[in-house]
Length: 302
Image (cartoon, rainbow, N blue to C red; front, top):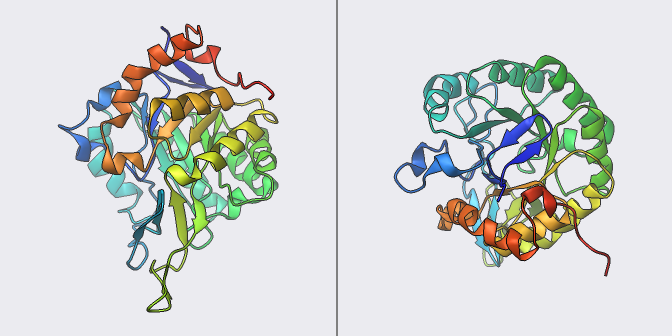
């Protein structure tokens, strides 16, 4: 069974990745997960300068999901390159670094600096974080998305993935902008804008007021987005949103994703990613497939 996948210029040993912000810097999972088996690891999103993030509460559990408004808390790119990348390049799998900026120049500078480092397989542009000021600006306008992707691609030697928000009228249009800009793949979806309220205090529960919802509740939205984009755009798709078992993985593949990222499930079951890799061959065999590519985008009309 061939589990390898090709996402533009990025090749992975298998389609099971772990999403940025949910797996730390991989070091935290040492002794719990054989990270070398995972198709790709995305460390926590980094920015040019250190960020303290949003005021608490930063996370709230809700029905069938999790709200977060972390605010991209991180130590900045220099600390990442000095303290985390040396470890990451030794873990034995593809490292995709997630970056976020306030301006196009921020994205270009970050991607160029990180993309030239040994051990970085690709850059994921976080164009869609809903809980920071300006975090979705580049992910809600097709022209802006195209422009930032094109600028990064021109300055960065490694493959470029564009992570998009579902909080738009037509995600297919935004994905087309990313494709036109030269993205190797699009990642669908980031979290869904949401909130939780303490009615007794008559206040939002998140310190930021609103945040991003992830987990099983958003999987139907993510599947819809993957299907719509797969029908409109020719570049590969990485599916994200509420994956917690092999059936979820297969649904994303059939809908049109060539790979998936495991997110919220890492918090309560950090071994899920490797278990899914073990279960994938049997699931593919049920569809008489000999590779992942054989099932991608095979959804039939009802």
